[in-house]
Amino acid sequence: MTNGTVLILAVLLVMFNYLTPSGNFVVIAPVVEIAPNFSVQIAAIPVKPKSPATTGTVLFQIDPRCSSTRWISSKLRRRMRREDQ
Figure 1 (cartoon, rainbow, N blue to C red):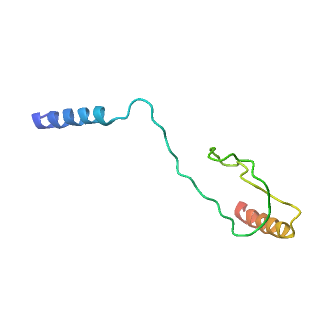
Figure 2: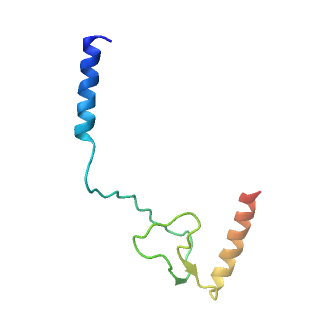
């Protein structure tokens, strides 16, 4: 290695050590807003505000007594069957 290469590597090493965060820090994740394409009555929202949600987490429960809910449920079931195939 030449002197120039060693100098560049030394400068990079010093910069990485200086710019690396240390101590206490907080990771902030993006927030995704969910807006349905239909209007129904919500029966419950079991997720607490600003709590992490993973795949399969129930975000809200639709009121099953609403007539439009039955129509939407059947439409969603058909769509899910098509996607599973």
